[in-house]
Length: 315
Picture (cartoon, rainbow, N blue to C red):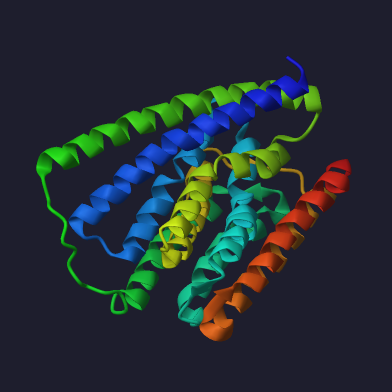
């Protein structure tokens, strides 16, 4: 197969991957609404379940001995989630309210940035993976304490029927199987693409997989805009962002990561650091994320793509 044929096949498979994961997301959301789960917890749950493609690709990457592919995919998630998806969401929604309290939100940003710091020496060792796993649990406790009193406890008028819940769970299981099988095919096709294009596993993950495996997040953000549920976008993207370092911790504990820290990686690090700082500033100022700030976030992502493709891959 030619490089072009590989890319076409991958885009088609990513489309199927996104549709399969979307089935899971919709059913999880339906169960959550029937049980009256709060918006914050819904965002965390959606973030976990929309990370199913990353989980499956991570597992298959370890099995096929291309672990850097998974690491690039997971680390590329931050700039996709908060540059591309959040940027476009803010442009569509015009504004999304925040509480303006960095004490509440900064731990999410810091947690996601930890792997970037760990990789600077070219490795993520098992002791660092344990830090990532333990920090995830600590972050959940922190966020629960920070937000549980601020969320409405009004009961939803939703009829609860056990057969419906069972049906939803069955559909979720089918969706999970589809996600796993499709991701396995994607990893195998990408091995051929790596040989043809002579591009590192890590940056195939950063530039291609990080967008493809975040299709469920893109779908949820678009639907949140359609249904005027602006706050769901921030909660969901935050939940998804929290899941990526957790997965890095789990996978690196199984098989420690080793990558080459070159000029391309340092460009990647720089753009993510800029985005990390900007998201924190935008979250705090005015207690709102605005359309103008969305344009800035999207601009950072597009500039990253241009610089990385034009200059980074040559290092």
